[in-house]
Length: 63
Image 1 (tube, rainbow, N blue to C red):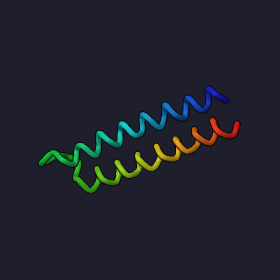
Image 2 (image 1 turned 45 degrees about the horizontal axis):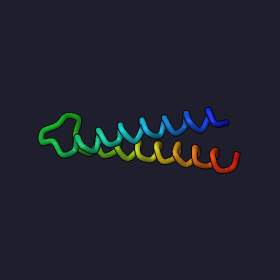
Image 3 (image 1 turned 30 degrees about the vertical axis):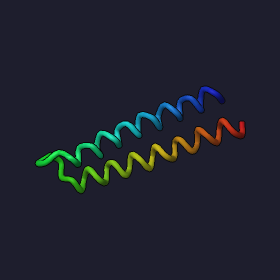
Image 4 (image 1 turned 30 degrees about the horizontal axis):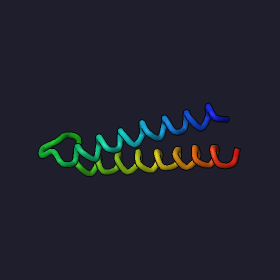
């Protein structure tokens, strides 16, 4: 089960890095795609990253 927890931690880190990339894209003027789409993508990646992180923590704590 340690391998599963490590995989979930890695996925959460990748998703958080992707969300940060989209979030930083909001600060650039005249960027394509539109800022509302970047906000939606960043929020989705942050949410999924949080879920993966929560699963990883639960696996390490209880199994």
